[in-house]
Length: 431
Ligand SMILES: [Zn+2]
Image 1 (spheres, rainbow, N blue to C red):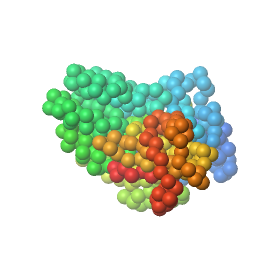
Image 2: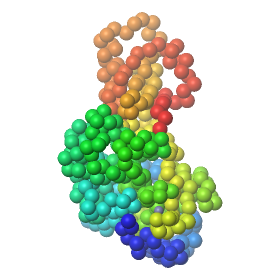
Image 3: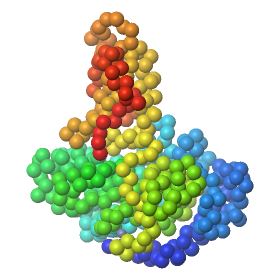
Image 4: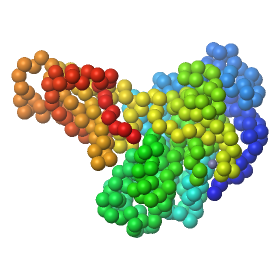
């Protein structure tokens, strides 16, 4: 099923002409409306008139996540506040989040992209689709919701409610498709298996994204639930999910190239890798109005092919991402940068203790332990002291990732034996 054949199956020549036209318009627009881009272009001696076709893309400067984090949202928005109808945010926690403003056209384009992904996964107007992403500032819930409504599906916005309730609703409403984070779906699948409900469900397809997941997790979910799964790519700075998705042939994720122009470059360089070679994924938005992005370095490592897919779509396909290059750690669907966890533990050290965080999986659920070893104490901690330390560790972890950790006391020798740990945060999960 193809949602927009005119766009998804156009010839490569037509597509490149369209991309070139959109790129020229976008560069002109940001040069005149966003001081940040104008300054960057001026520093590299580029004017909008220098960008005349798609081949001129590599003349443009890059944008990085750090650039955006260091700016205030008004520094990179391209329209006035009156034209913004919605704000979203990257799902990173305080300190590194990026606020994204969307115009009405941005929201419509986003729904269009998600609608295409839903069709790619073989779902459509006759399906009942449960959205089990968080609704709110994070782009998962509302993005999936608008796309599912656009194709005319019956939408069940259950969000991340209790899993018992989610499964009951899934059964009662004869849900056929689910959109959620893969780690969450794995947990749901486990519960369904435990409850012996697999054969009482109508679920046949899942579209999962917003975090990386391995082929092993994917095949586990498919086997446990007897369904097909599709991988959807996207993140808040680009619009949210829906930037790319895999079709029924599962040979890479089709990029919505009329909206997002991909490049695969050598790490930290302006040099493109050869087709089929792994490199860093860089995106330029072609239609974003609120927050256009020029050559945004995603940090994600993948490869690309421009060969026509058996499904008939002509847009490029990127390989599935199994690891984030920027060292994002996803714990129960919440993504956090490793350095944030390390900094959080370092901040705790004023209690004269050393801390280590261990992230692992138990019954397919992500678990967090924080090990605490007192420094130069020379005596046992009293139970009141232990409770006090436990309280401050739990509060810090909950504030950062919203999860209550188990706090375990150990001695400094035992902790130092684990000195081969290169970071104070150890992720022992094998996806
Ligand atoms: Zn395809």
